[in-house]
Length: 207
Image 1 (cartoon, rainbow, N blue to C red):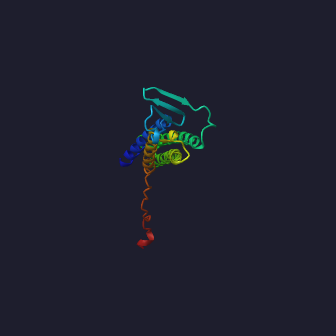
Image 2: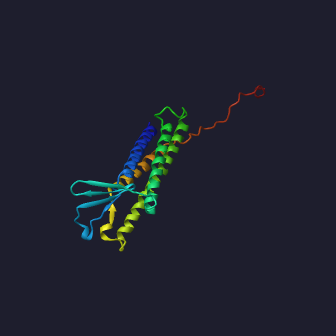
Image 3: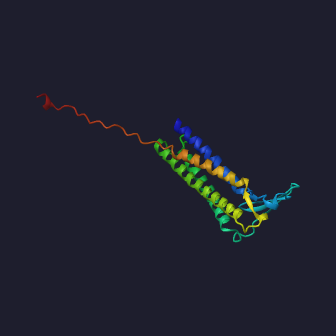
């Protein structure tokens, strides 16, 4: 029962994690305009995401523009987009594999050891997908930090972390925990003690 509960908890955490990855990938608030220097008071807040940039005005109006060309984007943004998409696809595939190996499901056969190994494989796949998202978020965050502390970057074009990157980080963390629980659910084969085979005494022993 404990192994079954561990699998269910790991699956739920990984599912919530991949939902967080999807939401974080879609949202445009990966980085927001930093209020430093003479840019402390402004009527427009600029946000940039993986797919579009948005301007939030103090009147409540929002204007967003999708990036026109992929070739115009910097390498960090292109790599982050690719890694996040790969992360979501791999994590969803891992969840599908884990479902077949969970003890609370009927698919995957009746062999408990085999089902547990399938669940362990699903957990490992989830861990790989979560690792891709962690690399993507860290790469993007490093690019923001580099541009912020670059003395040649104009003050009005400096950005800091937005809410979407924290959502993606949280989703990746939950996917890592859930995938680890599924990967740790494989039981060890219990070795059966071997006893010497007893043979009936032959008739010569009574002679």
